[in-house]
Image 1 (cartoon, rainbow over the protein chains, first blue to last red):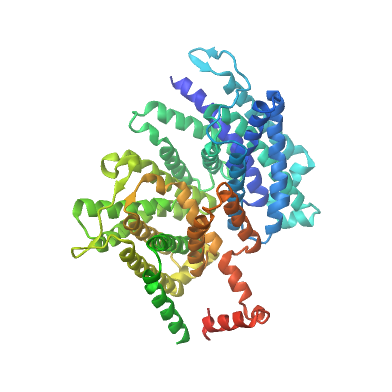
Image 2 (tube, rainbow over the protein chains, first blue to last red; image 1 turned 90 degrees about the vertical axis):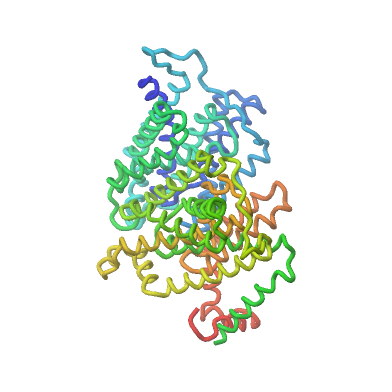
Length: 292
Length: 328
């Protein structure tokens, strides 16, 4: 029982973690909390569903389509919209991301996403049994993707020029600019990568919760909470926070009596506040110097 | 003096509205008043004191359910019930003080989100008291035996509350307390060095803000006559945040404009089926792009002394009149 709850919790937590990685990437370089991340992920995932169901594209290609949509969406959002609002304070930009989310919801509705639609599992097959723990193949895929995404993020930030430039921009925008980094382009890169990551998370969540206009928003809220738990500026923190959140949530709803179990979100949030009261910058976050 | 006359005329005009407007329009204005009061409360906390909150619907819920329950179980009339429920909500604001003393920015936002979620999740499960998902009817408001549960009476209540709370907010903002709020927002360490007690003034900010939200919730309960948990979810908290950000959050006209905008825009858009949320979303983006400091910031920018010269003459006269010699 305990092992099973932990394993399923880790699977859910990996999803929160992937979603949170995209959010934090955007936040680190642009200081915008992208509250449209859920809707943007929903949109990319819906494109995959359309490609697969309506146009008969093979599933793997359709999932690739979602990733491409996410990346393009990131470029469009940054170049097409946020560039025009450079002088706005970040609280206003936060509202703009909400507006973008609303528009994407409307477009998805217009394209036929009216009620909850089932989304195909990429890996379906008999579950694995390890001792008395049941492991669905989809969970394995989620673990694998979470690991791969984390690895890619690590490699990009450690070794590529773009990644190093992103780190520089997030540490000190002005200084990065003076060193010849094109911070505008770095912003576009972050949005593209962030929304691409969101699309990946969306395609992994959709088979579990079904796809409708708002199903991703709840995942995004959890992802934000996970990111805050990990320390909002730390990428490893996002993964750790996501995993912790998933496991705690699952343990709570597994062991509590049915009357209290549905209050798991409240419980998890309260726990996060307690953690934050003792560690105001999350588990792995850096203490900020001035500013944010 | 001119200003005083101007505002007196505005209030008299507003007070005469029930003679010209249909009942439905009055109802819309009542809803706008609810939003204005809540938005001013949030602006005091977020705009002036710099404490982010995306859980304010929780306080609205406490005010609304408090008013309804006080009327149902203790038979309190609305003019006692609303203030008492508001006060309860204000005291509940102190719950957020514990995280607020330790946390800033996004971390505090998550703490307030947690509060909002907790209220939204608890309401439907405490069905014995709150009526669960189906919600509850609010007992009819009566004033010394006279039934005042109609849009006209509620309009006067809403108008009186809005004017009174606006005046209170204006006085808070212009007093020592308001200066302390702004000091905390701009640089908390410097504020402390100047002798501003962070704990005291943050507590005050949360109390006042939650009080406003609670009063707005109480008014809402009587205006609509029926409340259910679905109306006090995260979406409502976000709406409130949108209002103050769109209007211009570190001002008092800002939240008023934002609240009016968010009341009337969906109403006007209801004719465009299907396009509704596209236009809504696009107008949010449009305001952010063209008015980065909100609607009020935009107005202020174009009525600044050096810009006002380039305006057409009638507008210039209007600006000069409203300004009336004193500072804006």
